Image (cartoon, rainbow over all chains, first blue to last red; front, side, top):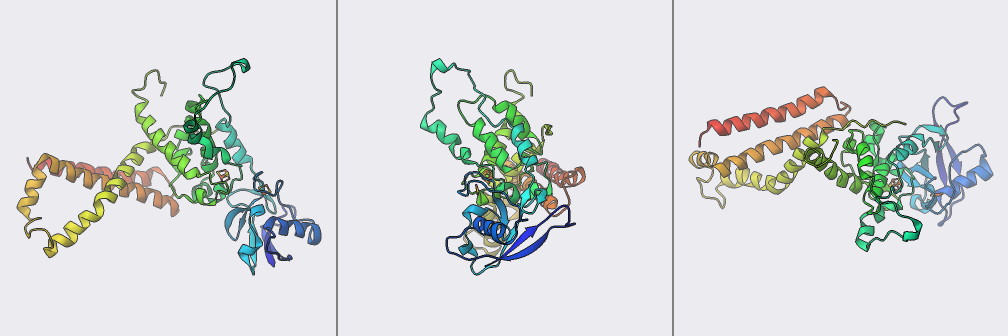
Length: 243
Length: 122
Ligand code: SF4
Ligand code: FES
């Protein structure tokens, strides 16, 4: 089966180009395995990221026939008889071949404090924080995010303006905001209230379609738009608020 | 990396957009059916249902005024928001001018509708 793989070697290529490789076809072969075959048998100069090969590390995201997908969980059989076009993940700066720079995503992720900041500090001796199944359900789906950035490659608004905080990071901000143990929602909402926070989103919804973990970032954005809009007006009447 | 944290004013327009969208979804098709098809063809409705006298009475009555005001203005705010963001997608990026143009029209339509509903009398 033919694979048309995007190549970009910054030291010699002025522009990305595509190189065609013939890889052995099998019903159970993944795109990642095909790329590994190329690297091992045909062309050791090809660069791409991967680690877990089981859809959990989130490092093998790429555009496969134009759709952002995880290479390890995308099978050649879906594209039989080929060819399949493999591009680096859309909307990100390409470092080399299929390797993109995740620096922007990581910076945004850090900016929303993606960890629990306890509402009430407790000592270990006081035991665990208890949650009801209902409280767990509020944020559970958003914990499934593996930071694969497929939703960023899918988001046309991120493509137009990379200042947009973006679907994945908003989903993760929501994951902590909606957690009953956490008390730092106000801090995170500062980022979300901005034009480049929630309000760059035009409810396209493609992010949720491509998410390999069924996180539904579009839903997180929508829930927070409502919360942010209410807060926009209610902040004037809320006691002890600094606006 | 420091992120811009200036609060957006988008919620104002977004809420108007949302309210207009909901109203459009609930009432839009029915209004088109009544005013565009059923009334002119004399279907189901009595022939004078949308006559001048009836409509005048409707627009002079307070619930009638509120209904007309809500339908006209919220639909326009909804449309303005859509157009503003569609322009952005088409390459005319969000800027003060396109924002002023789109929301300016809906603001003008709102003032005009309010004015018309007042001068038509009670
Ligand atoms: S929300 Fe889904 S698509 Fe986006 S980074 Fe997380 S796992 Fe990937
Ligand atoms: S290799 Fe880890 S998600 Fe694909």
